Picture 1 (cartoon, rainbow, N blue to C red):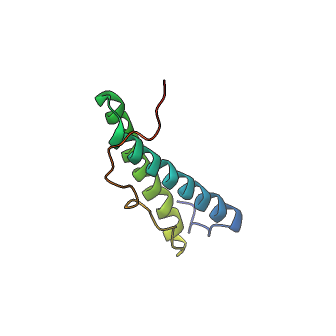
Picture 2 (cartoon, helix red, strand yellow):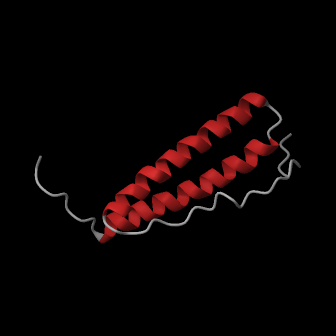
Picture 3 (cartoon, helix red, strand yellow):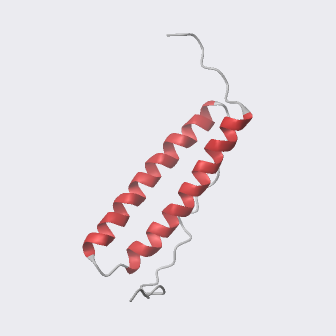
Length: 90
């Protein structure tokens, strides 16, 4: 409508990169806490958050890809299969 989209500037690239990185850390935490959650409702909530995190990462990554910038690599495979409760809250 208004012509060609402009390129991202360095501050925008930096902020998008940081947002993707922090989102990936949050995704890993949700994966870890979901697999040890004893309450099914809490587990479903964390799985829903993980799905939202994936969508955010894909959307933000697309902004970078449109400017031919590779987004940070995902670390989705780093969670273990442990079911042990390492964080106990009384």
